[in-house]
Length: 564
Image (cartoon, helix red, strand yellow):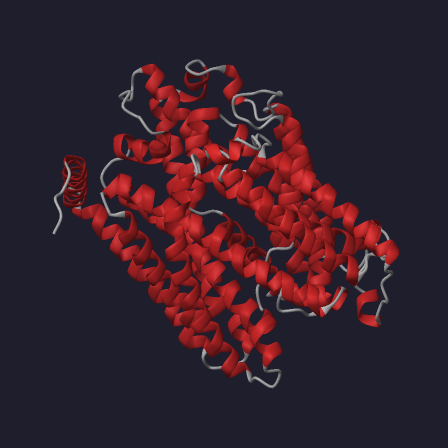
């Protein structure tokens, strides 16, 4: 056995000391908070499993993967919001609020405009095509090759983006609050969430998501209200931080790295992919009872998306204000700990447990939604193609096995998220490199009749390859060996816009060179003109999706004017 160096001894000593501190933190957790957390975990897993046992009355695939197409607009809206919101938002938006004010709230408010696009233009086609997955839709509009490519990309993005980042962010905040080891948190939450997702399918996912959304919003509102109370209200907060931090649109060269033009050019690219063409999110719409529920559900989610700026971003800014006022100790050395710092210093016993449950709610809902979408994608788009005569019962079994494998893969990937300086910027950077080719193929496919199958597949291949190159440039940009040849400084939002331009040009040129041969089915999946989307039956009165969309659009414009 070799000698141990002084540096290694120092390292081991530091690790042992850190583990003792974590253990001490977990042991000093108040029994009331522990009880609340345990009751929540047991309750949510039990509800998910009971939904699964109830669903076993039928073994049909659509019952497991799409909840029997029985979802109504309130459930769809809450589930969309809950699947979207994860610990990444709770932790990283507070971090960005502390560092940059309200600027990164753009990622929340711009989503409302994209959800209007989903309600108007995409949801009707998805239901008309009676598809179980979005790759299935691409096959009906373009070709089988496009379906296969999107299925592969969607599974990768679900593991890397939706599950991996969420697990890591949740583990970081749980360590900060309760001293739980990061890998222990990742494995524990993944196993518990995977349990009821494997058993219950989409019905279990949306039922638990609806409950988790309520818990999440309640917990986040508590942090915001208590923080503002200690800051002497809105006026007290405004007087204690720089005025620019209350603006959401920033000029070129702003310290946030998010100038206004990058928001308006880059966000639509990633937003249309995320809200209109990503299986993990859109699967709730695919399970809608009818077209009106499929339209109103996303609009309901759009109204809920107004809240995150005030309950996720604002607490970080409030934390800065309280430190400036001297009402919180100036001990926040790492901005990533902003949310845990506020919880530890501001919340009373009992309420800490509620907020911890909210954090778990955000984490588990996102992970469960992504796991279920992976199972659906693999079962319908890969396995059933290999074995077309597969029964629904077998598909459900395959889906459960794939859910387990995806959970293991996400656990392995999660620790690599620490590579990024900010978790929120990291997740959006990866999305910016994945989204452009998919957004181009869906947008042109729905609005341009001449978009061809050859062009779509070429765009997916070239766009994905270009996205991978940009991802690697960004990942290794600080390495000396790369700096000898190129110094990568392109902001991720602008990189997304440039990639979209490349993909659009590719799709247009190839479509003109290799025209598309439409089938009767694909003819029905292209709008003749945008106004055609507004035709058809709709609910009367306040429930009319056109009225709700106009109200949501006007509300967002007013908010942008107020906080510009």
